[in-house]
Image (cartoon, rainbow, N blue to C red):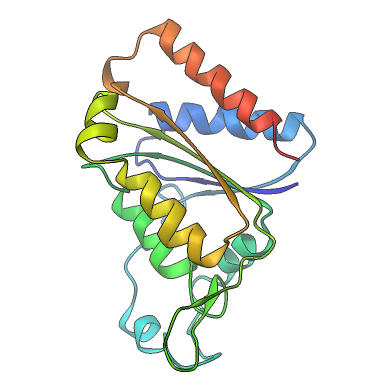
Length: 198
């Protein structure tokens, strides 16, 4: 499959960076075609510009000049793997900015002429695997906050832009104090999910 791996962590020696290397190596070993975007390392600018936002509703006129390469990689992807920390039960600003700028009109979706529900455009995207680390225990994410990252990915992004895409969210809780055995079990879960990409 054509796989796009997007990594959003500012530290090159972070747990997320290590997990992203595991992902990339496994995908390549399984014969997938892999493109990577390490948003911090590549200096991605997450803020939506006034020019980009101003062109959002002009059909076919979204100013994509600054993110054309990212748009092409997303449009070509059959599988998307996101590796990121969950901070304050949401996405890092860098990843949120990638969604804002790259999941753009005319590429990830199309506006309806009467500005009613948007129409999906990522028809080739079939699988998304989101791998995230959290400092909190599982019950805070599941019971108190009802998994906000999963809801945004499943309903807001994939649900509207790639409705045929299956989402798998793998969350490592209490990641700041993870024991070796628990980390190894999490890595095995990642590898098993990647092997299921077809």
